[in-house]
Image (cartoon, rainbow, N blue to C red):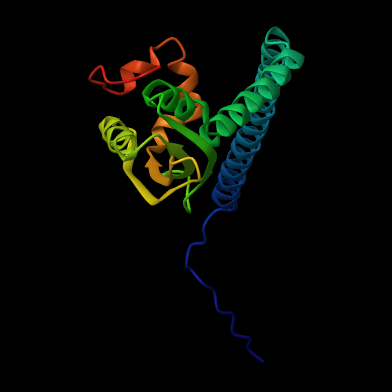
Length: 213
């Protein structure tokens, strides 16, 4: 029996060339892996080095800050802060305090010898900038003395709207009266009074020579 053998004449690629391609592929992957490894290694080292520099800078700045604090002596700074608070509190009290003494000085200077006062009172308005209301009682020798005294009070710029009322005679013939007027709050401001202590009180009002001391 005859057997048929089929023979293929298609040439095949040599085995050596296939091995060369595989070798090239393996070599390229190895190079890429090594490159990535060293890149990560260098980046990690750089970050570690940068972190160390930052920590040193922070420590140096903390030392500089502590040195600056010690130079300014914290205990003295605290004392100065307490003193500043006390001064502010004192200024606040002075700004709200009034001094009645300027009113008495002016009254003493412009009151005629024929006029005398027996009672003095005052009250404030609703706020610190309100006028001070003064009420007084007194007696005078004759109605002419009251008229002259009213004129003297009206000439003072700090005494506002002086009004005599309730005129009557006592058993000795003297004229009894009630007196009301307002006072400019700036005139009796305690702080301003201290500032003007060396000023002449007579400079705060005018007179025409009819004042009797």
